[in-house]
Length: 336
Ligand code: NAD
Ligand code: TYD
Image (cartoon, rainbow, N blue to C red; front, top):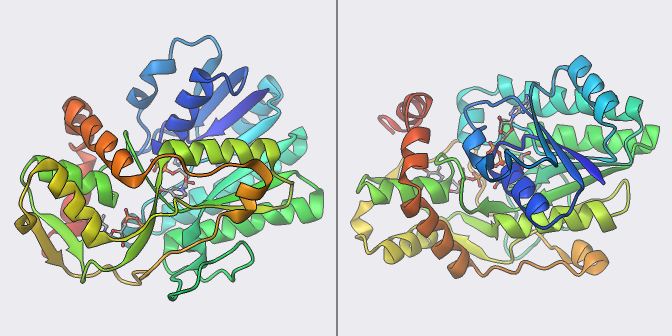
């Protein structure tokens, strides 16, 4: 099988490509990535010389480029990760989210339809369901109530992708995963931000009361679930992918501080995020039933591995936390 991966230089896409090549999931992987602030070819150093791998620098919104690439490579499947992915950035500037997540997905769907690809996995998020009241858990039929421009743009692209199955029989599969964590995650998201700030003894900004609940999924577990959905899923279906580990943010940050031996006084309550979802919770039985997939990495172990990776990769962190990152950090956190 030959796969086209979009957004493969980001956090989850690069983990997917590294695993796919390490474990021989595909005969060839082509990675189309625009290299935005979140795209980093250092994440793919392990595979860059691999004869089964090709990197193409480009924008998914460029339909002509995508059409040419599909014509040239004729992949059986597209695994679509490319997106603007951070909620806080979608509050500061939503335009790029509509452009890449909605229009970019549209452009890919059109090219995939013309090329007749056999599988189109649209990688989405549980945030499309919005905040879920205790004690409920959303299954795949739960209504979509996205709160942020990020999650609304993902919900829009989910519906567009599903319409290409209903209307054109493009074999689309939508996956909706919970919060990922692991090595190579850009330090704008909760876990890598808290680890890297704590390593520098900098304040750890906790939004509001810090009792918002997220369900944590180790990135490699997510990648294995995407493979399961790609190989065993039914076209036109949606599959939730949860980590089965719900925790309030404050508890996650305490666990990070405990592992690092740093004081809880580093935590600093700051003004809450507007439209902040209180709780995410999903069921994963549908994917488990068809594939036998289950999350394999317990949160404690995944967190230790992740923290060790950030400690051992100070150069990666320092390069990522310069330039654009500093401007973003100032814009999002100063005076909060
Ligand atoms: P990321 O921000 O780390 O990486 C996104 C990648 O997409 C980058 O390499 C970037 O250069 C590329 N990209 C952005 N715009 C592009 C464009 N127009 N054309 C081509 N490439 C472009 O994101 P991530 O955390 O790895 O998330 C990957 C996918 O998984 C996203 O679709 C996201 O919505 C979804 N998801 C993420 C999480 C999470 O916890 N991070 C959870 C569930 C679902
Ligand atoms: P985040 O990693 O941005 O993921 P998402 O908002 O997509 O779930 O945030 C996870 C949780 O952590 C969310 O409730 C917001 C909170 N958070 C903070 O309290 N402080 C921070 O600096 C960040 C980035 C997030």
